Length: 186
Image (cartoon, rainbow, N blue to C red; front, side, top):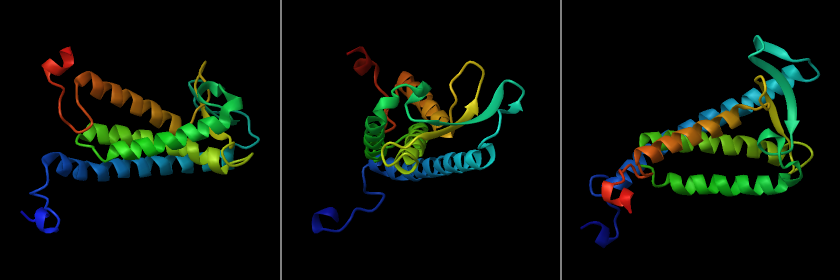
């Protein structure tokens, strides 16, 4: 066996789970990178075009654009805990990267890519925007009736949550294996 002699295993000799993870990780990375870029570009455009303007209707009263800076979490809750939220986001980003090493499912790769983009998108704001590192305000600009103003990163986090729930209900583990009936009953 080659591994015993100190050389690496070829792709055909690695465990099938490791091969699946190697094939899914690029999908995770591309989804995360593209959505992160969309989030950051959309925030930059929002600041450039919406600063000092009244609400901009996009789809009548259903979708409007309004620039706000959010120091808190979802629904502007916890505004006094911005540093804590920043630290939680950093831990979440590291955890997503850690779990991404075990990806064996396309749906999980997409879900974690969405989650990484959302977490990193808002974390970037908290790290680099005023009033300063770990206390920065998140740029929000999408407004629906009777709903808090949000951004692309928030959409990514919610899509990720939905995809993760779907995978959990389907009994598909992160590595792509399915929970057996015996395990589900325990």
